[in-house]
Length: 461
Ligand SMILES: Cc1cc2nc3c(=O)[nH]c(=O)nc-3n(C[C@H](O)[C@H](O)[C@H](O)COP(=O)(O)OP(=O)(O)OC[C@H]3O[C@@H](n4cnc5c(N)ncnc54)[C@H](O)[C@@H]3O)c2cc1C
Image (cartoon, rainbow, N blue to C red):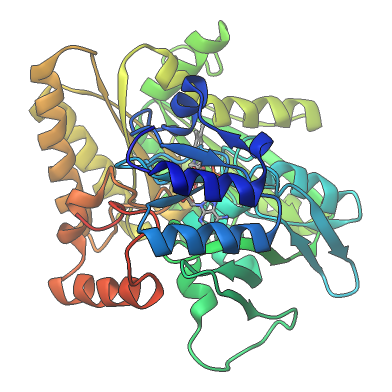
């Protein structure tokens, strides 16, 4: 056993039951990393099933100063769900029930381990809609989405997870159980602690129940694919669309490097040869409005010099397009190159400058960089691709990464729009946040977690 003393292991085992404790090597490996692929193994994994078990686990860890790391589905990109120095991983995988879909009040009550796409399918069956759609939606959990404030392609029109959380049940590190927010859609009583917890990356409290706002499912939708000779033309189309006041449901851009990786992964091209960038534009809403929006989008793309503009013929073709888009991240990883993955965001009007920065970094550091993502939000996944074992290239990528962050902040943007900080980006938060902001955040952390047991080593360097 690692740094968690045996008597504590015994106490925790009594709380959740022996069959819900993991101490084997395979579990240490599995729970010792997330999608970032780096981490530290836990000393113990506990898999509770009730809020009172979680409260008891937290109390024991707090009393004995044992690090406690909450884990959703482990798809995070910044090491958020993995220990930095042993301790206990608390997995939410048994909290996997949709407790209620309330059609009268347009809301759903779920346990945090529910997989995002399962919730979406469940509410769509009754004509409702849960918009947040991270590309990981088939594998990530709602709890992880709330803790990271996940976004996705639909963020442009519908906003991110934050906008859909009405209430939370949470456990503080000392074991107290709090009910924050309510089923009502308005609430201005006291500080908005609920919103503070969204995006808090498991450092302030353990989320045990979530009430989510739903909206009516849009009656119609249409999806358009436009290809361009280069990224600049695609970016021009995005700018033109925004100028035309088109708020499409999604406005996704995929560059040539990313398109090639997906084609290689699938064994077939997803765009004609010579394509430098592709846009996926989706409109949803009442049928007539969808037709008008898609028409406008097609115009804007042609004006910007699109080489082809095609409308997805039906649900099957639309799904094929979206699965290709969702594959980009995995396909880049499958190239065998090491992927230093960033999710920088700039004000929408500055996207052309962001792509200019990426181009400059490519030339200056001789790096392969794949860029794709939510162009409508100004949120672009910039992936620096490094040959494994090439220390020189890796060092160049690290310098390029710092320059990217500095320049994004200079464009009034942010170093992370979706993936959070975890431990991977902790060394860089000073580029964006002032010392006073960091000091205030540390005082907030201290108020929630005076003994610093919850997810230590995250967010702050
Ligand atoms: C292929 C791929 C595509 C992706 N695409 C997107 C995308 O489009 N948009 C996007 O935003 N992200 C994306 N991600 C990143 C990731 O899926 C999201 O950050 C997601 O929200 C993480 O959910 P999870 O359940 O896997 O959480 P985990 O990785 O398990 O945990 C993430 C953080 O949340 C905390 N946490 C988890 N559950 C709880 C809880 N119940 N209470 C308190 N804290 C908790 C953890 O401690 C950790 O800090 C992608 C990842 C992959 C692998």
